[in-house]
Length: 398
Ligand SMILES: Cc1ncc(COP(=O)(O)O)c(C=O)c1O
Image (cartoon, rainbow, N blue to C red):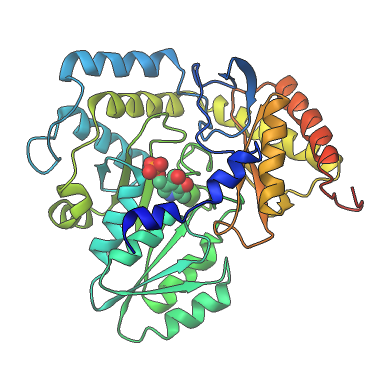
């Protein structure tokens, strides 16, 4: 099929636009805070991954501006060749130290980390074993690797055990989201590590949603479970708690050196620009210096969850600042999002294939900078809109 035919046959987005409930690509016209301006209207932002509220922090902004003044706006090359600046090395050293690993390596996005690391490390004789709910970038990394990809049902440790036992001589790399990005539950890392050791496999944890969030010092899933020495590779992104864009992987020095010389997503793509690197470094320093931001994030998370539970809303498996509300039908989820926005609350829809058919969600994410008053207001609006849209609650039909 030619490309215009393929594109012309895609009508789903227009159908939803005609219904006035299209929920994607909604432009924000203000700074990204707990309240933002959209179409001239002030709305409560309940759908940002800016968990620690740092995208708007004066120190983070100043670091970005200073880096532009010092180094310019772009790198005009990959890390491998002319695109390594002193500031890339500084951030790599700081991330290695923070995660307790020997070395770290920056990529231009978190997506590229998963794509570039998994495809490089899993060779023809290897297998990558992933949770069915892992992020799309992990799946794409598997598609590009020469090894086998084997999926297990979400958090099914008996299935993982069986798969690893069946690998025979193939080397296994288990890759899981530390915090699952759609439903906010935490991977059962102690059991994953136990099975990995039993079968001689390696473990990579995607800490996109856990970095700065989980663990006493915000070091992520491994710290949360006191397993920092057991995880072989930790990846993270700068696009959430680190208030920027880019990503990193941290591991043993020889693994990082191997990636530096083999990973195509690193070698054949320009390095993250100075402003992004400097803002991530400034955000990391604030995370280290101000643990109270994380304390506040968890207080907000518990308040939002408790209030939703009090009005009969089931938040599924979530244990983190990602809080889903089950809606069911895709169109109903779009309608709920549209009505919430009209009423001044921004949330994201999650529909199939990201979740099972009839498993559509709205996904709330909380920030440490939200006030209790903002959370209470959001819950009042959600309560009203779910009633208007006849979304059933626990123990009640509407
Ligand atoms: C679990 C997970 N991994 C990786 C990524 C990719 O990160 P980035 O936005 O930096 O490309 C994301 C972001 O959506 C994510 O949620």
